[in-house]
Amino acid sequence: MEHANPTFELFGMYGNWSNILMLAVTTLIVFLIAFIATRNLKMKPTGMQNFMEWIMDFVKGIIKSNFDWQTGGRFHVLGITFLMFIAVANVLGLPFSISYDGVLWWKSPTADPTITMTLAVMVIILTHYYGIKAKGMKGYAVDTYLKPMPFLFPLKIIEEFANTLTLGLRLYGNIYAGEVLLGLIAGLATSSVFGFVGAIIPAMAWQGFSLFIGGIQAFIFVMLTMVYMSHKVSADH
Amino acid sequence: MSFDYLVLGASGHDGLNIWDILATLFFFILLMALLKKVAWGPLMGIMTQREELIASEIAAAENSRGESQRLLEEQRDLLKEARTEALAIVENAKKQGDASREEIITTARSEAIRLKESAIREIDTEKERAIAAVREEVVSLSVLAASKVLEKEVSEEDNRALIEATIAKAGEVK
Image 1 (cartoon, chains in turn blue, red):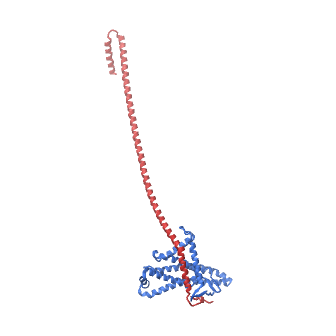
Image 2 (tube, rainbow over the protein chains, first blue to last red; image 1 turned 90 degrees about the vertical axis):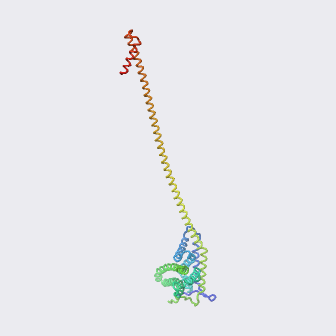
Image 3 (cartoon, each protein chain N blue to C red; image 1 turned 30 degrees about the horizontal axis):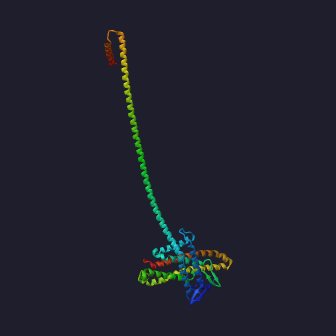
């Protein structure tokens, strides 16, 4: 049950080979899906092209519910990539996990807080960047920290950190919890014949549910990204 | 069973996983850049292209609809015109037919009258001629008869005058 991580130290900085491996696998899978789906593009879409176009329209819908397309269009690529990257990362740990010598190698990369927090911090930094770009330094500072009331300034500061934390930890918590429960069910299944029979139904139910959670969490992540982005970029918020 | 491994950040060392952070950023940004180049860009391109195609198709359909409407109107007008023209032609023909019928009838009628008149005239002439001939015959017969009866007493001239007067009187009585 108890897994160690394949950590390493290089130039005084720590790393986790398992995380890096799974990130590479996620990147490769997302790239292959998107790459294969967009070969041989046609005016009249078929098969995989339909699927990709559906994803694009889906993200477009998320963006349009937060900004007008004129300002929001430039985040389209970011949104689609996030959606697919996180969805694939979330489901990678579902079918199995691989550990070798008590070291966990195969898991969802999003079941690691370092990775989800990195993505969350990246999103928040991007929102501040685009906020400054859209409104200028002064407009950004006033809109972000002094509205609606100047005395709410401390709360606004806290809000920024809270947003970052919740964005990253929500994703991490959901996926990690799913993996822990799957691990427990797998432990039950390998304990005895009765355990295996008893574990079939919960395992299937929980995998199906985790698949659903994985999709939902990807959607929520993209949705919140666009919400925070529109708070910083749009003038009327 | 120990749940220590559930604790956040229980990765076996105290430092932050800087390499993980760098790897996350690296892979994500690499993926976004690559996909923008090979997948999203072309896909967005074709979607925009399709939007334009649809818009232009709609415009073209609108155009041709207007065109066909116009042509239909034109055809309808032409048909109406042709119909009135045909009616006029039929009317004309009927009128002309009526006129020529009248003319033929009139001609026939006048011809008949003329024929009848000439026939009557001919009959009258013939009648006159026949009466004159009969009268002549009667006179000479009477003269003959009287001369046979009276022989010498009356000269032929006196006798003739007498008889003619008698016959004329008889003609008046008749």
